[in-house]
Length: 224
Image 1 (cartoon, rainbow, N blue to C red):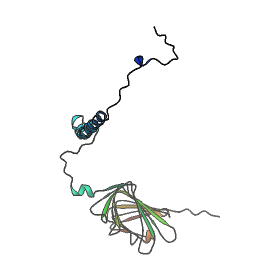
Image 2: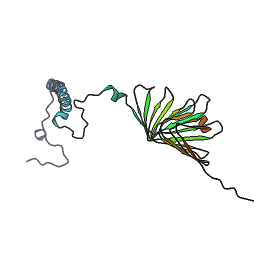
Image 3: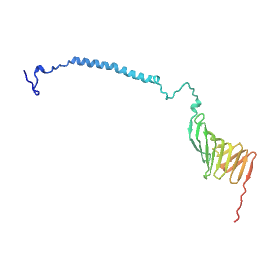
Image 4: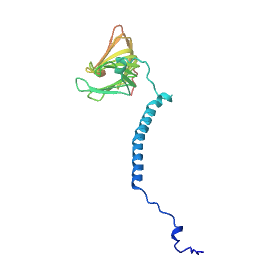
């Protein structure tokens, strides 16, 4: 009987048999694997692309915005709305003016008129005196440089005058304001009503047209 030591080399009959690998067998297996991958990878890629394209139809997203059978007219495309617009320019005498509003909606082409919501206009003369106008609605013609105001039209002068009417047109190039609707005005000197008005030279001259009335305030002189 042969005694084996844990540290001795086992005899030849007890050693595991080493099988030499066949190069032809290994090469054939590798070739089949490459061919299999060549066939499967394009198929998997095609399946993924098909799933991505078909997914919206299989599981529609209820949060998505859909466009149905809607007719979009040219006027809807051209009606651009801007919030808090501001238009700045000068009149024919290089005196500045400014037109602002809560919103402006473009009408027609880019150089046409814009509808204004809650418009305001400020005119300033060369000496720094100002006139401020406000209304409910407005139409600003950038080509003709006019501003039509309608609804609760108010005009304030730096000197203390106030004019109220329902409609007015501001000729921005001439710094002139005209109106053909009933008007009332008041200032430090008195109270005026009329059937129309015209403001020239940025408030230096105010004319009331049609049937008009004037009430002057009495001033009390204080003796020294």
